[in-house]
Image 1 (cartoon, helix red, strand yellow):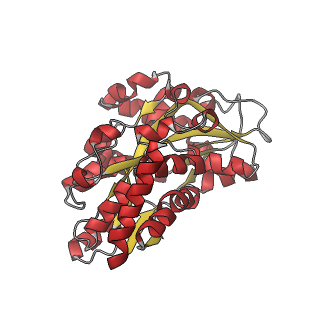
Image 2 (cartoon, helix red, strand yellow):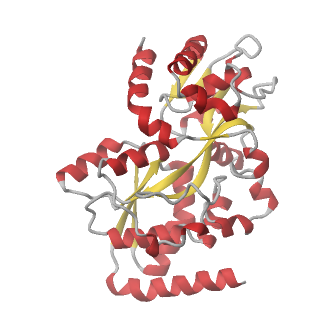
Length: 344
């Protein structure tokens, strides 16, 4: 009961200080089912509590757009959802404001990887293997099956980026989840991953937008695909027979980041604090199967909701935590190599 009283008190305080100077806050995310969940759990309650209007914008994670705004000193995006591989790099390049956690919350309120210098994690998600049980009778159990085109013939969907694919390739080649980044940190490990990708290249159907993999599965264009787990959850809620294989999934956080130079920095911090509060976090997890970063929110969820979350104990026991530091150091060179490889 106390949690909800605190939430109501905070909302009332936001209302008192917000209505006097209501503003628009432009919030950028990846859209789709996740965008809808954010709107229901964060944006609409924030608007109601403060009187400020949230203007939603969708993108596909293009950091070049943020860079262009910051360098031109014409920043029109106030708050941006950023993937972990980009948050540290963007911070180092001066694209994002350093965060004042006295205006967000005590860092020990959140799971360990959430608070960063220029980014505040606000949900845990996973890239997993998924299939359509209406169309595929041989149930895959992991990445070795994803690579086995004799056992399970047909196209495979993969995101057209180097991240995740190298890790999946190594696991398909027998590397244990816990050892993936140790192997990938070597030249031999990278070569091994690309060699493994060669095996499956003729069978790949690339995707770039998160909405595509479930569409591929429903249409029968692919027999399996890599996919964000929340997209499968959304499709299942619509009655689609899509299933997730958690083994060997790569879980990660998405972060709120404030582009450097926005005139609405204080309001953006207010929104970060609101959206990472316990009650909005719990509401968000009920709208889409992405895990809360607020530790109190996790305790507020029922067993059925927890069962579909990437950071539930049963789902994360053989998962890989995305190594943001590795991708900050090596992402650019490996992306160039991947782009050249994919174009051959």
